[in-house]
Image (cartoon, rainbow, N blue to C red):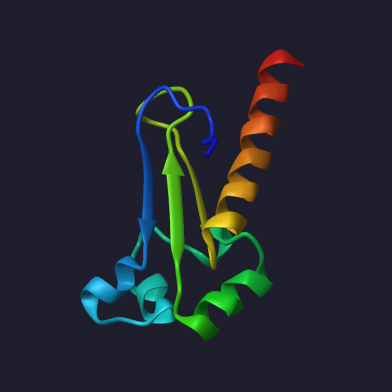
Length: 95
């Protein structure tokens, strides 16, 4: 499996909300570091709510300060979006 470029940490989390006996929706509303804007799409957010499945990938491409975060309903969806962001970042650096 390929991961986005990262010079600092990369964290993959699956269903953390279940550790707190919360639904996806409750978890997003309660957790200050998550937003509906972090989801791959509004449709995928709804898929997460409907299935109560949540994948999170957070990585630090250059330093331990700036990071990207992607939330989604499946590992495949999250990884595809993360690789799009990674490609965009590389294009910006070399463009």
